[in-house]
Image (tube, one colour):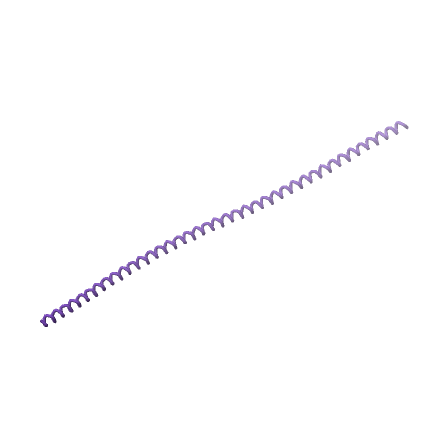
Length: 144
């Protein structure tokens, strides 16, 4: 019976070893599966992170482009305003020169009119005195 007990002991030992190795093998497979899942999840996280970063970079680039376009539009509006202001200054200067010229022409015209009027008055006065003189001389001759 001892032989039977030795056999059963070895059989139990053998089965325990088989179960131990089987469990160990199964645990190794499960561990490998978990590592594979973790690697897959890590790859998915990295892929998602790259997508998020790519989208964020694209958004930043779009905002930069929009800002660049706004700056360009602002620059063009400023240039247009500067040009308009320069044109307005030139127009104002031309208008001032034109008004000054018109004032000068009116002044000269008034001076000429005053001069002509004084010449006219002088002629009238001279004629008046000449006529008086003639009349006076006639009267003196008639008195004689």
